[in-house]
Length: 366
Ligand SMILES: *Cc1c(COP(=O)(O)O)cnc(C)c1O
Image 1 (cartoon, protein in one colour):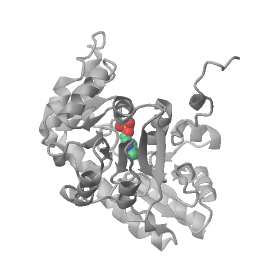
Image 2: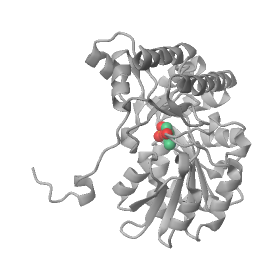
Image 3: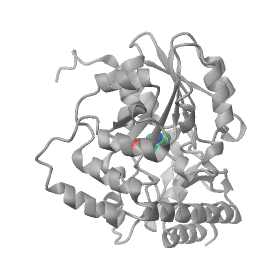
């Protein structure tokens, strides 16, 4: 097979590593019941109202959706207190990351910046776009190194990514610190704050940058329906960005990447206050429980404002994950994030979180 016409960065491209699926684990270990706490999904399952909306929308799928999903952009804007023209929806926030990169970063010339042990889509997308990807070290205790980011920026830096709350560490930057970072960036560099987990941070006004987007010309905030709204399988995220950038991104994007069912589901999810508050309640309780119980089991933990907790067991993390799999519990070994000693576990239903803790106790102390 000839590969002479393939771009060199594709030939050695290292693909995204997703968490293991329930079906894979059932087959491999011959299990009937498997608990998945590996991808930070919503433990409550699909909201019944959303499931109904999806079924209603099914009769319309012979039609194209409305391009740029204006009804959804309006609804997001109203719910989040921003202008609809600032909202760009996408096929997951992954698509917004890709669009931003392609709209502002020049291949072969520009660079994008993040810190080590971060969400892999920033680096993967940069590579696919032919844009250099740079990482600065983290601070003590995995703290988000905002000062180092400010120092590492140069005149060719197009985007600076900060995930807050951070995946996989759970660390969260305060809005005032991010404001300082946005203020010291050179003209032409955009600060992208990925708030995929901001729903779970408390109190949100201390952390979220959403209401700063109207005032700052160099700030983009990313949000997603994959976590707190329980729509991971439908692929729907959005960016809130300055008007000049939003209009360029809308101009460049391929049409109809947010499908008709996803739009209807998201409109219903945004209005479903019961599901949303039930989600926050189960996450807050489960996070407290994990942060209390894991140290009692001899694990080191880090503070988290997300729907997951990062911990380090007293035995090799890979072995612990393997033992958990044998007992039907999927968690995320953080080797692929460059943290081979650490594990990320998301909050499940109360029963799932307890089953995980019981299995872990058996492994560590049985
Ligand atoms: C889960 C997650 C997202 C959401 O991605 P989607 O493409 O919207 O599903 C974005 N950023 C981070 C850091 C995440 O962990």
